[in-house]
Length: 432
Image (cartoon, rainbow, N blue to C red; front, top):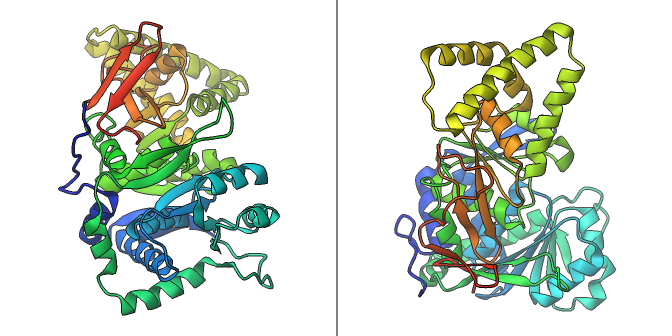
């Protein structure tokens, strides 16, 4: 199967699409993040402005098409600004897990031949400084959060704001340069490197093209039902392909609003604050939701426990009928409506799932019993299967429940079982 051209709104690359939609969406909110405990909103116009300044700044430092730019940071607005900004300049983006130790960082930066590095803060910068002598290929390092580095001086290291200032000056002298670079791009261009876990050695960088990115965008809204009306909470690492698809690429294509969790430790609190309409989580997170409820019920009053037992009994019976494809009677719908109003609605509000219209699970198998339990709460979780090299490959179908499966292959993707039992797959958007 030869790779076909993949277009989103007539665009075959992320930079072309970003230029189009960021101009059209203007003052619509693109993302939110907390500053000093208060949620701050950033529009598509803000997103465009920061990405342009980063692109201009990198171009002023000599970045050429195909050069690698690495981002070593927890999820934050600057991560996405740098991601898109580097691609607008023709660069290739490599995300580095902030949990990596210096040895792993050295391997990734060396193997990718990275020229420019974005580090989140002093902690991430220290990892680079420990191995600086082994990284002559790194020309400049820009730090998002300069806290604690006020008196720090280094020939290669500067605050993120310094790059923005450099970029603004370069952009004034070079009008139209970003648009020209974007226009020259094609779906065959290398866009990103995503390093896999390295189960047979050191991690290897999967080479993802612009076509790969555009192909992932085609899965919504028909399969992964993410739309412009959705709110997301971004908390899994953006250097992992799943979070990159859900929180970077799909919102760019379809306009959902991204909300960044403050830290991995505050995810449950931030879920309550945001009440996202679309939730993607790995099975361990769905298990945490379940554990919170069961723990709370074990500590509840006698009346609270009895109310929960009554409601969950009604919910599970309803779930079983839905799974079996049986119609619900008027009395069953009435009972469930009462159970939802008196019990489930409060439970979901505490979990931050009270507005959740769509939910998905991936990265590992999820228990059928857990899927049944969430369906009792009227949260139908779709299951996805994929891998870095191919992105999302299969997805369960809305309203069709076959627990223990991950659904059929999506359009443009082929899956079969080899003679040795291995699952093999290919698609129009696979890695190069």
